[in-house]
Length: 255
Image 1 (cartoon, rainbow, N blue to C red):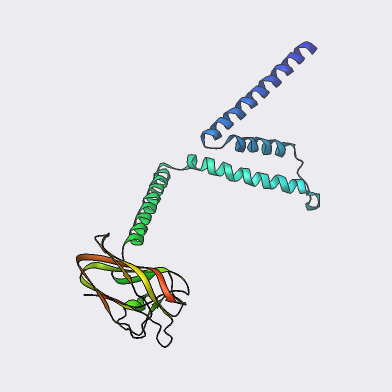
Image 2 (image 1 turned 90 degrees about the horizontal axis):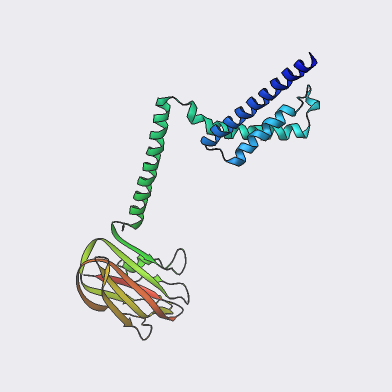
């Protein structure tokens, strides 16, 4: 009887442990298929073991910091399990919608990126002026170089070279370029000295003009340059040097 009982008990315990181990291995395998990393799978097993071994407190005052730590680990594991198992709990319709949403989201992102790139690279319509800098936030603006007023000037910051770019959309024909140097009216202490003017047609430099002003002229006169180009889409003025405190350009015009 003792021998039979011992044998029966031993056999039953061994079978149960083997079954439990096999089940645990199967669960681990399934969760691995669902995308849980080995470290996450280890967390699941460790938290499960800790829960089985933990004593549940009967009263609030019996709760210890270890219980709080175990609860936080449980919440983290539950979140990862939900994320891994959720797709397997969806209906066919929900799965189809989820896939459609992901594909639609990717397409939307691609379209947004493409439109953003197009708008970022496209020249704005009309005549637009940009520059490397200006004398102050509210004085010497780049667009003062094309405002048709000889008494206003684009002025660079003190003691700095720089550049001015004018873009045209749609492109225009330019037969002659006219430039009026600045002088900082009432002070006569700044003007362009040496510049290079590049005229672009179809996005490429089609004409280059190098010019030098020997001094500041309190009553500057227009300098004219023959161009004779169609489809001009940009004019760039590179200021290499200046007189006195900095560069100044009163007007640049074309006809």
